[in-house]
Length: 381
Ligand SMILES: Cc1cc2nc3c(=O)[nH]c(=O)nc-3n(C[C@H](O)[C@H](O)[C@H](O)COP(=O)(O)OP(=O)(O)OC[C@H]3O[C@@H](n4cnc5c(N)ncnc54)[C@H](O)[C@@H]3O)c2cc1C
Image (cartoon, rainbow, N blue to C red; front, top):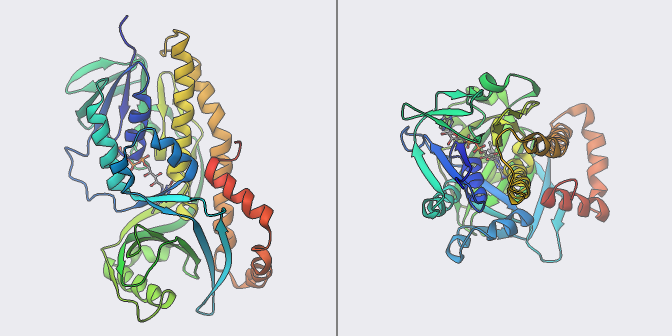
């Protein structure tokens, strides 16, 4: 019997991870990537992957790949008050790993190398401009190719999803921007830290003891700052936070607009949207790709069940069922992260209340365990 054929468009972390995970199914996959043909400035972000998602990914990685991850057992949280940084919380779990940090470009390279070896995957370099939702076809190299399922992993900037599925968003314009880059230093920093600063939350994510990546989310007034001005601001803030004697060398920062956006429509006919094109959450909790990985795992389970019963993917109800099974958790996560971000925003009128709450927060072991469990495995696990 002819194998069922799906098309995955986009080679960000979502597209590559989806192709790799679904490649274990008895189907044919066309993966379409435009990065090869359009020169991009690269992705200098790092991603912190939760312990349970990492364990899941181990099934796809080899020992050499694992060297690219930096594993962490502790997270420390600080709050800025009058240019002092107060430690108010520590997360740990009996010396077990909490997260594994890796450069996005490195992870993409690892995924791509594996995909190139998969017999049921064909990688095509093309920027897709035409998709016909009625007959599930994609125009590839001027040829109309029909698929049983088309998965769009186009990121947040593409307008294709909006055009094909419609524009129904739950949207909260946070009017924020995130800056990120790598920092080399002569101190020893092995565990991640989160600083709630007056300008906005700053996360420090080590890639080894001598290099970390920072993600600093700020209000949109910083959007007009030139790269050098941001670099100077980050430099002086890090000097304050770490120790003025610590030598630091910063790479060029990249900026990412932040919004909380949740697309109500994630599928139509034989079209499914995954990744940043379906929802964006604030990077404060490092959950974006972790939620996406949980989506992909679930999609695999649905498709695997379906295929093992000998059923057709095309025109099947499982796509709707899959979307409905993931929507509540993703929306709740997005709203929860938004709430946390707003709570920590610099605001003179609430700062006293904030101090009272933060003072004893570290004592609430139950709350800490619950937060750890949710950020590791999700809400409904
Ligand atoms: C500053 C920052 C820090 C973050 N940190 C974390 C973290 O620590 N942990 C975590 O879990 N998440 C984190 N995230 C979220 C995570 O980085 C994203 O969710 C993830 O990278 C999204 O990947 P994506 O593939 O959906 O989108 P993208 O990376 O935008 O990829 C989309 C791809 O589609 C391709 N494409 C677009 N249009 C077409 C077309 N027409 N034809 C062919 N290809 C096309 C593009 O070339 C691109 O390669 C962070 C996000 C930010 C902004």
